Image (cartoon, rainbow, N blue to C red; front, side, top):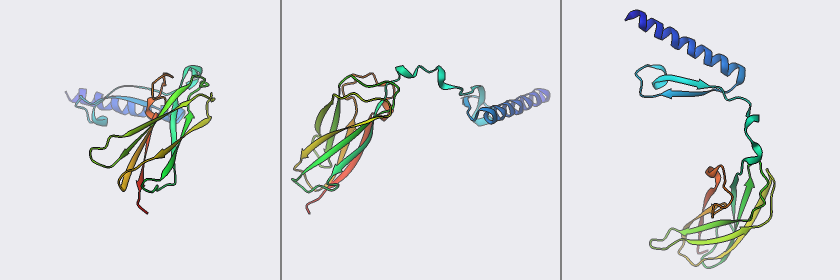
Amino acid sequence: MAKKKEESAVFEVVVVLAIVAIVALTGQVILNIDTTGTSFSLGGDITGFSVAGDDSAIPKEDFIDVGVSEIEVNPQSPLIGEPFSIKITLSNEGFEKITTPFYVEAKITPNVEGVKPTKVYSAVTQSFAPGEKVSVLFNVAMVTAEGPVRIIATSDYTLKLGDDNPSNDFLSKTIVISSQ
């Protein structure tokens, strides 16, 4: 039994040294850890690892990613009953030119009990290349109580584009409606 523990410890040291060497050579490593094991290493047994290599094998022309990069409100603290504008900036983070028209949603939710959110939509009809940004503008006239209002912007609201990275499709911002 003592010999098996020694061999296990030696194996773990060899694995750790191999990982350190791979990280030193490539700068990147991805570990697959089994957390159901009983070993002391990283909360479980290392069941395998792979090196993140050259990403040239990824078909970049097939990756569609339109995300919400910014929400601007003018004026920044609107007055009750006064109109204000919401500018939503979208960026093409993918590798394909976006030519298909799609819809952007701005959901405006006052912090008032029982009040349903107001949803407004705008179509993005112009094409934009990878790395480029486009903006849509909403002019809003809200009569609401004083206090915070949450704005949630959603790119490609109808899921028309087949976005490969939905993690950046939403962005929220809270503004404060004031009486003066």
